[in-house]
Image (tube, rainbow, N blue to C red; front, side):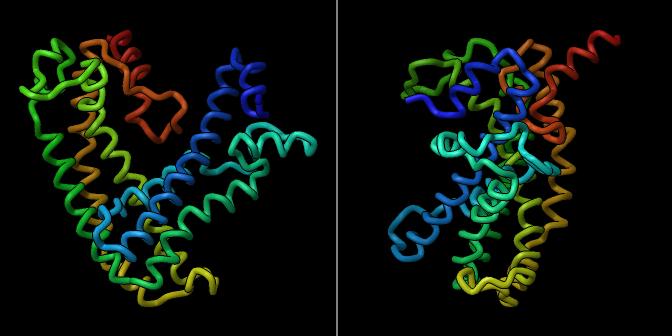
Length: 275
């Protein structure tokens, strides 16, 4: 059965600019969903320690990514008529900017509710951040041969099988980009989480919570931002190398402009033309 979103896409797909805006809105809602699902995983893990440890950094990063994808919006990119709202909601989309913001707030609310009961959870969050910072540094330190798009199936380690080497290649090339993006979104979300831990008055979420705020403040955000700043030229080096091989599969036009690591295709082409 067709829904409001699918019908709109079918009618408006030639309008690339509008399509990007609506797709950004849709992606923001999906990221909020992902954050809430991970918050549920955190809850389950605290109840049953035999379960796999959830990725706490991703939980906050998905919230940050959702917010950054629609940051500064004062209205949705298209107006949804009242008569059509139920069908758009079936598409998984909130139909007013206020409902969209409330949905995003729920994405971080799930994490804050759990962490307000178990502030020690923030210690595990900090450990995961440190591991990811180290992983990013190691990925960026690899030689450019590791990020060269040629003869990939021959480079697969023995015993590893994959149907299509192209997908493995893209995953490997995207790994430092995706981790840089995740940590950038996390850094933004952490500032919001600190603020909400004291400014929100919500009994259901256990807020305000001074103990939680103090625990979040112990995470060294300055160090994280410094590491991201140090990583930027190294990541640009990898993207420039991929561009020299005409490899642009990591480009994503829907992402906001501040996600420069997803908008390098056009800039690389412009640079070549200017030489």
